[in-house]
Length: 268
Image 1 (cartoon, one colour):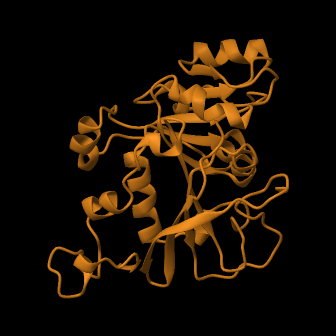
Image 2 (cartoon, helix red, strand yellow):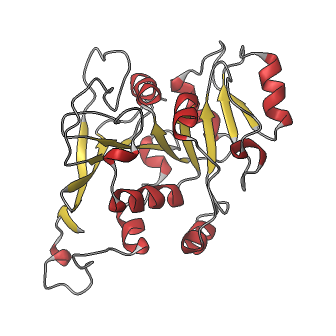
């Protein structure tokens, strides 16, 4: 792996302190992807997205993101999870990708303890209808209780079933659906301030349209898929495009690992 941007003065080839080309350590990657202070967003919470795209803009191949991934992409995937308080994911992605609970990783234990975090990130599932199998390990056997984010008018019997399964139910909206502009604040009230969303595209579209996204970590795979797969953001069109600035680029085996941060504060 090599850093393409930013190339700082102390990261010249002759600088011994810089990570060498080749396999970066978990600590090297964790330093490169360290969260900004949550206050930097202006809301006391920071929401980043981690997505992968083919060269021709596909967010998945035949319904799954794995065919677009790589070994390095999965290392970064693990690092981003290891740094987060909570992983925010849509119910459809939970069903399609077979999500399980996050696991504790010894390599992050000291870093998480120093940041006042639990042993693993909580999985926060966003759902209006709560059409989920609450007997899955995600709900029945998590290391950290799974959070279910829904609207106040969600089906009461499904809310009760979620709680019976051990999930913590968080309301972010008055209707059945989640109000994306209120999602991050609802999680921040529970001490979950370093947030990571892994999509899918529909959820990310809602978060973008709600002005909630602070940072996008996008892996560009050197692959072309064709077909009719959705883009990484699948939501209502923006009246005015939202500007992001390039914050970093790493490369390995032709895969580009980019970071973009919003140029203006996200929604209150």
